[in-house]
Length: 274
Ligand code: ARG
View 1 (cartoon, rainbow, N blue to C red):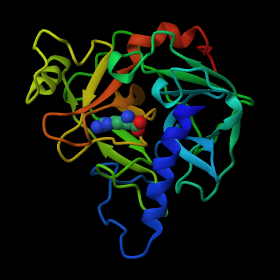
View 2 (view 1 turned 30 degrees about the vertical axis):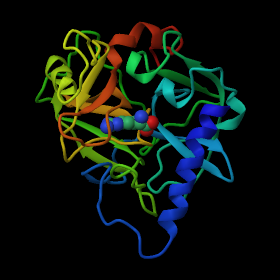
View 3 (view 1 turned 90 degrees about the vertical axis):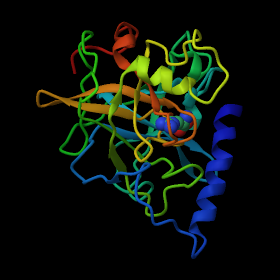
View 4 (view 1 turned 45 degrees about the vertical axis):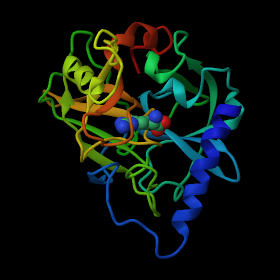
């Protein structure tokens, strides 16, 4: 599994650096934001691969007791064996209370090639359905018609880097940040600033969505995790952390896979009822 290992080695390297004394960054965040309260984001999961230990490499979300939604670039595009993969359900501090769960099947979207091309979405079937509790819950998928316009209150969560190339320091608490939705055409215009790509080339595809600012963003290691929005009192998963140019850079909001574009594909596998 070359792509998994390629991700693991730099991750492990930065963990080792962070444990060294005197160098622990103080900045809280995913980028910006703060530590998540224990009772929030009960659908957040951590994907682990076997290395020296079961190291975190991506986020994900529980959308059914037996199914996790994540990003295709965490797993593909090549075929991956589920044997080297585990899922950790909601945990406050990464690695502190691990109960790793094996996976039956990895299903990468058939149209996925790179995150920038789109269809950066994948499903994992757990071997056993999870017991739902006060701190482990599923996140609802949005109705097809939901566009999540600018102004929608949305949050992104994860154990990823707290800035470009700066890992989350121990004890690796789950982080949350409220990110403003950036409308697709505006986001596409922003991504065309300071580059030579022609305006006629669409960078932000319709099956993507954007959120974030120069102070608030997701970053490496948050990929596959959920962008969730509170709509009329219920939480819905709007996006999957996919890509961005750096983290929290000017005119470069975070780019997410737009969940409403993939509902039919998801429901080919995931039952609608619990
Ligand atoms: N591709 C990254 C990962 O694998 C996520 C990047 C998100 N970037 C951003 N600026 N929001 O973890």
